[in-house]
Length: 138
Image (cartoon, rainbow, N blue to C red; front, side):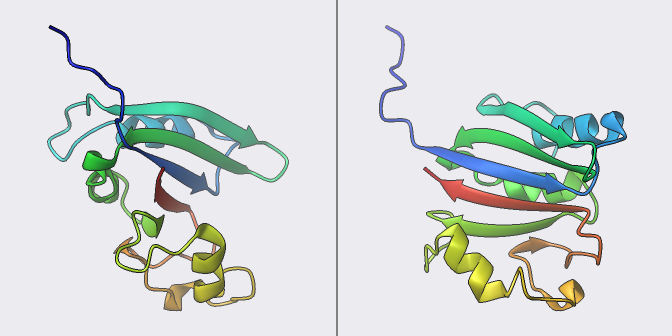
């Protein structure tokens, strides 16, 4: 008998990248998000969308995974050096802050010195904020 996927809890990840004009960089980051720490493909991870804005040189990669696979954030940090990860929603334990609350807490839109931020995983964002990831359980 096949197992049912009804009731599977999902997490969404938004990877915000300060790059759009060099498509190969965006695609390599999307591919890295699909890999575990051993370089094998996660069976329960999917890239849902890649949106790139050439004018602003920004891309957003939307990924879905099982809540059980929130270790994806740790794997992403391993495969993409310099990556910063901020958790929110169900992934932000124990506070479970919404994205809006988390950004206010960090002073994301008013901050000038991003190097002082402490991400949940990975390196502090560089001035350009090359790659930041937000994970949220759905």
